[in-house]
Length: 213
Image 1 (cartoon, rainbow, N blue to C red):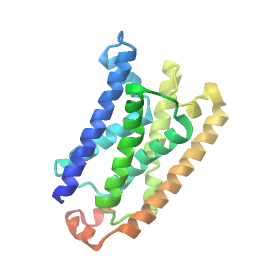
Image 2: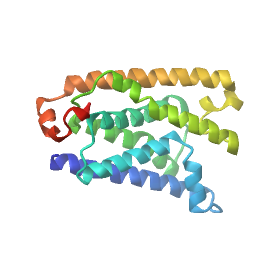
Image 3: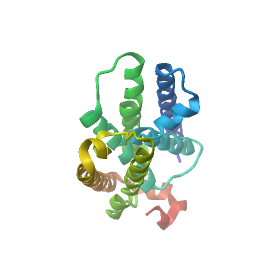
Image 4: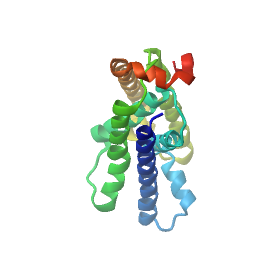
């Protein structure tokens, strides 16, 4: 693994961890009566936060010398890209000051950095169409978790998975639409990855061998 990959991965990890810290800081500033663990628990209901945490851990591992398989870095890139698209397409709201910076950090700055890193530096060998199906597992697990948690604590993180706002049929339709979007996006990632894959990628990742698929 090149020094450039590791150094840029370190910068992305710092950016992602910093963005998450800023989210906690903003939340505690708005509700100073909350304990830190309460704010962490509140933030833990959001796909955005959990996926940014996944990015932070993944890129910290890369910076430390770990060689993730190409399907994993492509998956993380897809998931954080969907975070940005859904936010700017459905959820963005006017903000200012530090709240604007905290929202932009997790919804725009981190996704942009990850996408650029994947395009420029990530290994992309071994990606196949079935990976687009495997990559649906994280959104599926998250929706299941969010719905169960929402029924227990009475708060659903997003309107499109809130049965009290859009009804269960509406939740089902939204899940199908978003799942289709994830799948098509995954197919696009596979196609782009195969187009951009360099012969040197396979040599660089030789220790992974067939498992990289």
